[in-house]
Amino acid sequence: MKPLVCALLLLIAQSALADSGTVIRNSDLREKPFSDSRSIATLSSNSKIEIQKNQGTWMQVKTPQGQVGWIKLLNVRTQSGTRNNGLATLGNVIKTGSSGQTVTTGVKGLSAEQIQTAEPNMAEVNKMESYSSSNSEASRLARQAQLSPKKVAPLSNSNTNVNTPNNGRRP
Amino acid sequence: MIRRLCLSLVAAGALSAPAHAFDLNELSKYLTPENIESATKIINNTVEANQVVGPRQEVIMGQNVMATLLGAAPLVKDAALQRYVNQVGTWIASQSAQPQLNWHFGVIDSPNINAFAAPGGYVLITRGLWNQLRSEAELAAILAHEISHVINKDQIEAMKSSNRGAITEELITAVLNHKVQGERLDLAKKATKAATEGLYIKGLSKDTEYAADLNGMLLAARAGYNPYAMVSMLQTLGNVSPNDSAVALFFSTHPSPQDRIDQIDRKIGDQLEAYANGVDNTARFSKISR
Image (cartoon, rainbow over all chains, first blue to last red; front, side, top):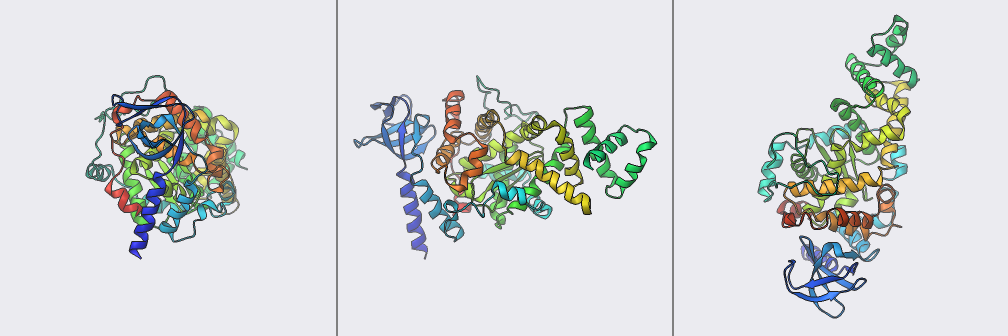
């Protein structure tokens, strides 16, 4: 059974790597995921590409001509309505043992009708609260996960405001 | 009935004439002194002070909204998953402007794709959305977006602006909801549901959603994640067909994923590039999503 699961996971990984996309503005295809890396080619707007992976603000892509390089993540529009539905379905089969209801039905989902007909369930709220994490536990586990707080300056040209902590603990 | 109840409580709050004593006596059958106090404060704040909903009221509102959403779909029965989402969410929230709020996170057992936040620090994502995620940074992007809604009080503002008259009723019933009985309980349930429907079926404004994306990216970066996981997560959601019923409510309450990416492109672009080498994935995500 295990090798089968592994094989399925591998299949998912491979299909995820084969997503397609469209370049939305003229962009350099670079050798490495850095702005000062050598440009291999210029991809014109509307070029089709095959997406291999993401890294930071970059996406590794393959052109129809077979060139592989890096372009800015924000310069690519991923393909609509393609293989991702199948991917989600297969993921569900493995994760839930059910038959991929994600793509077939909204009946069991959290739909507008369900919210309208819901009976409030306060016991479930209490249960949700019982899973809470303390700040100290969350911080300890974050450190284990190699996460550390970063100083990030507010953005120019936007009204972002969660960025100003009021607790004097800004890292 | 509710209007009368509200008036009575305003009166009680203002220590008004004995003419209102009858109503108050009747109310005391249903209300504890603590509830009367909370309800009065809410009325005072929303009607008299006209603007402010305090922290305690936010928590009561959040609990009642959550009760309705969890009544529609319960939590996924996986304690390890629920604890993990709380650990990630609490870490991100600890880097926000409100680290001391009692933040609560949960995954609900719905195959649809969506996430919800309620006042007071309550955040839910659906199992359908969880199943789409490829990294902890993508989870962080969603939680940070929802945390931003809570911190900016977007739900409360939406309630105020969309239905000023009814807001008072909704708030008061939210307070009453789990203490009252009989006819009033039905009324309370209806009003809480009305509030929840108003918020979670109509959704927030497009601008509010865009702002939560930008704030969410900043917050994710501050928590040490690659903030551009917001973009890859939106790209994934953009690949789900809009005809798919799993995204019907999500698409009706949010701008399209591509519009959101376009806004991020315009407003943030490369500005957070220095943080793009932040954490994308973790061993704990791989373990829990296996």
